[in-house]
Image (cartoon, rainbow, N blue to C red; front, side):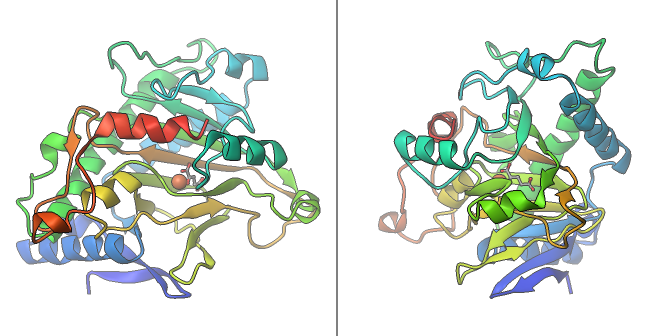
Length: 334
Ligand SMILES: O=C(O)CCC(=O)C(=O)O
Ligand SMILES: [Fe+2]
């Protein structure tokens, strides 16, 4: 068996897959693992990976830096504020972003004002992208923040390449098929902080969530969650099911652009973050997570992957430039 289930409820089965069997296994193990990964993305749109290549020590450093970043004074955080969808870098204060499935800016605005998400975030883009510098916090305040976050960014970039290799192998393509589409690392590392919140907030306002329901936009997302819980994934029946944290694993989900690229053979599944399960008194502690949003290189032209259609008529979408697609999606969110 290449996988067990991490989640199995309401027809949603999210496999738990030992990624080392793809990275270091025999040819047969690699193939079986790649197929299990692809199957997870085709059915649930989500998988959990254990024994992956991200060093526990560097993950811990990233979470420590995140806690220190968000503990700063508001004015210090606002000195590195998020600016534009194209740059997509910097700090967003609570209520700044409202992810949702709403398509128009008016719809998003209406919701944002009613029940803002209880979260703040800091986004880091590819360092060195011409014209889009990362707004780094002052070194004095956060020692080693920049250097260690960039190391973590690079580890995640490599992991994206490996997961795409697994998808290629699972699809029966040459292993390196996606390499030249994803090597640049036009990705976004997002630190997320959901501040502590009184339990009554969720009672008074039944629509209140920590992060509204949405799908991700890019190829895949590597999601690192602490042990607080609250992440939920929509099942085929429309119910939201807890994607309970499993120590040492990464939750990986496919995004809209990968779904499109795969001619909808891969699913980009809706998820959200809600009131955590199991009440601990009158106030929930803060929750921290790190989402690494992977994208095809912004310069890439994305059109149906070979093998996902038999005839030209079966191609559901026109080809599209990756960067244009992502900026268009982000523009509707902020
Ligand atoms: O914090 C989480 O667990 C999920 C965050 C998320 O889905 C996102 O930022 O896109
Ligand atoms: Fe997400």
